[in-house]
Length: 284
Length: 315
Image (cartoon, rainbow over all chains, first blue to last red; front, side, top):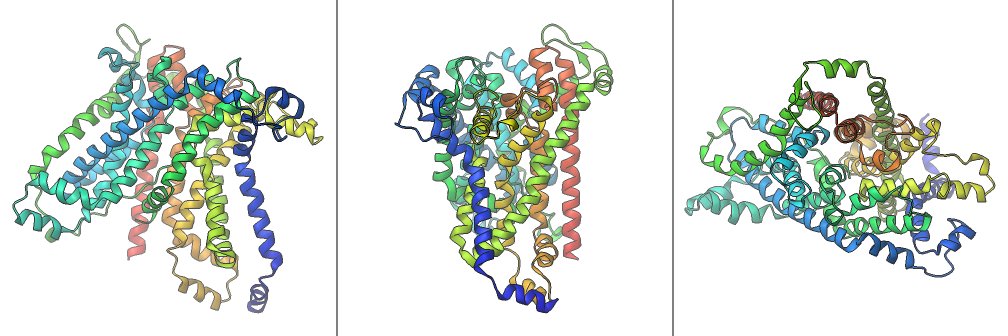
């Protein structure tokens, strides 16, 4: 047995290495294939698609599909709506999370564990369990079909997660720093803004990034709450168009590409922050 | 995108180190409390309340006790939606975790060490990319690829002479659920790979050396040491993905709308139909309440298992 394994490890042969590499490359290409097929056909003339199918390289760069689709749905407006909602939610949710976590984690509120369970559950709840009352209430107060309603709702949902995470982080906040500031006569507000927030800036920026992207990607609640065209977000606008009679193969890939590009851009811009955040969640 | 999940900090080591609660901090909680009451607590309670009524959304709800729940138990669609969610959990939680374990081990243990860490991280990023897409966009991408008449898959099959294999992937009850499952594996795979590769970095190399001395093979080393050491990550991945599967809505809405028939019906879409298409808010609320109860119980069990596990490790 020992001999056998040693022998196997003894020849880490080119064969194994290249088999592993080929296998992984094929798998990764399969995972990336939908992206490639979409990109390929988003810049292809419909006639060419009809003649040569989805795998042919486009003979010329045909951007009409993308441009037409952009103007048909007023994509710029959808991007702005998505950006406005996501950015406001991210800022609001980080602020609320910091305030909550300051009281729970640093102020060591009593019943902390119960609070944490509540926040965790609030974030994990299916939105279906909130949607109808929220729909009804927002109609009562005249906020239905408004971006403000979506912003308020997601600020609460994201802040639930942020509070849960930040409270644990703040518990380990160096007490000396707090005590030193208190000695200098700083009140609780000053300690929060001058000591706690600057020190935990990296964590807060990770949270901000997550909140922004999660909100950008949301579909269910924006679908319910943003019914008029000029208020829809990118995912909602694309989602409701799916299956529309005017959507042929190349228009559909053009629309898909327009949905993919911002997401991939965020991914590239925030990759470092994101990876750090995903890891922080696991290792802690 | 899947969410990371950390566990709450274990209770303070009793007495001495715990400070006296300071009520001066309550003010900081006020905005949060108001917001959570308005957006989460009150609507959640209202939803439970509505589930005991017959209500179309206008007028006065009529109290009917447990009738909606009784109706659920006898509703084939309800049971089918949960059977379907079982398959979705298989596709979103179980398969990605198993595949992810294997891929993470190969990438971390073999590719990173023998070929180079950069190569490993390129593969990792490639596998993770679907995770960054909005769910609605994954739906559009696959809705087109799998479309029976102008979809890319059938057209490719045709061109390579396998036209006989072409199917109405999303429109045929025999294939719709399988197609959705395949899409979900594609979507979800990168998350466990990233999480497990991070976890594997914590494994003490000495454990591996000890195992080598004992003559353990690669597979034994993997199952006995690596899998054991990254158990926290495995829990987190299984629970977050299972909960995400239970809540799945966007992909179903865009890909199949629960159809054909009820072949891909899931609880959240079933609730949506009752709320907004059939104006049966009471029944929709009952479905949502059941789904919530399942998720709460699952989360509770998970935290229990996790803390018990930590205690065992600690002793």
